[in-house]
Image (cartoon, rainbow, N blue to C red; front, side, top):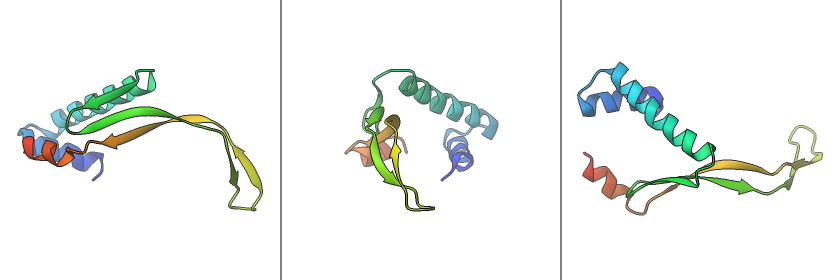
Length: 94
């Protein structure tokens, strides 16, 4: 499912227009991204999962084009860890 399909599904479930649903989807995704990327520890949604930033250490890699060894710099990445109760969340909000 892509963002357009998600927006259409939200519009159908909430019985609202697609443009209104797009505003809500963008607001939710933007808020999650802002909070995780701007230094908050995590965004946790009960029975759904949590989004958080994880530090990845520097490591050695291989350039696939020529086989040379390269150093991949340390960086932070956003991770989603689903809740063990994700199926319960789906049924609660049907």
